[in-house]
Image (tube, rainbow, N blue to C red; front, side, top):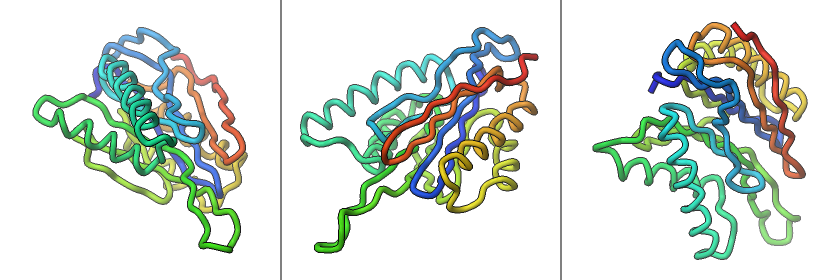
Amino acid sequence: MQYNGGSIVAMVGKDCVAIASDLRLGSQALTVATNFEKIFPVQDRLYLGLTGLASDVATLRERFRFLTNAYTMKESRAITPSAFAHLVSSTLYERRFGPYFIEPVIAGLEFHPAPEGEGKGTWRPYIAGADLIGCLNFAKDFIVAGTAADKLFGVAEGLWEPDMEAEDLFETISQTLMNAVDRDAYSGWGAVVHVITKDKVVTRTLKSRMD
């Protein structure tokens, strides 16, 4: 789980959600690349982060893309974040005796229809994580994964506040990730942050310490 390094964090805001990861790909303490993507779009308002063994990241990225497309064609609708979380869980549990060395983090907005005659419904933030055999973990504040997870927990506990607007959420998740990976030799070398709202997804790449 720690051979290639990498860390991911997802946070909930007010009608928005954010997910961020570092960009380092390593071979233990040796840095191999500084542009290794760990977060992938699933639907317009749904992103998947994968941290762990790099070969399994690439394998599962394609596996989940295939399964999501199959679901969309069979059901004639886009997959919801909660349905996708259970798809991730069942896919990992299938391989529990020879597991993928992956910790997934799911972040998105889920549509909740209003009761009949009471408006159009709302988009609510949804985050979830899982261990390498698919045991789901739901949270109402933040989810962390990767080699800097313990540092991310500490910083996020101090910085996260409920009902943050999108820009405040971006600043909080950025500071959380950047400060945590500075204390972890297997993570860092830049970061990418996706802030998801009902209207758009804003993606920003951050520069960080390169030592």
